[in-house]
Amino acid sequence: MGRAIRSGSRVRLIVAERPRFGEVWAFCTEDGRVVVHRCIARRSGRYRFHGDTSGPDAPVPLDRLIGRAIEVEDRGGEVRTLRFASGAATAARLRTLDDARRAVRALPSPARNAVRWVLRRPRRT
Image: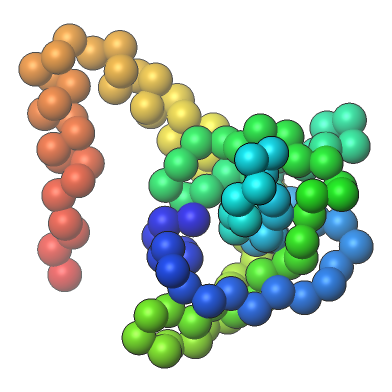
């Protein structure tokens, strides 16, 4: 998931019946990889997931779901509990990000590069 769960982290899963919007779940992709992403939608008996730093995944059927992620242990041994994000808030944020990405892609190259640089700047505290 990138920002929330770094690659190589250990994730504690629990058995749950079905994903709710905004929950973080582990599932198997069609090529056999295990992925941990946030649930953003359910359509026709399949679930849509989206990572923090990637685009939406292909629809996932119920039989490829592994479990709900509740804790993450990073490589340094720090354990933290995953927070549940409401489906409406998550979906709205993702729609806004997708709209922003489309707008940036439509800009001419010099402007697009300037916008990307501004968006990557670290925030001052």
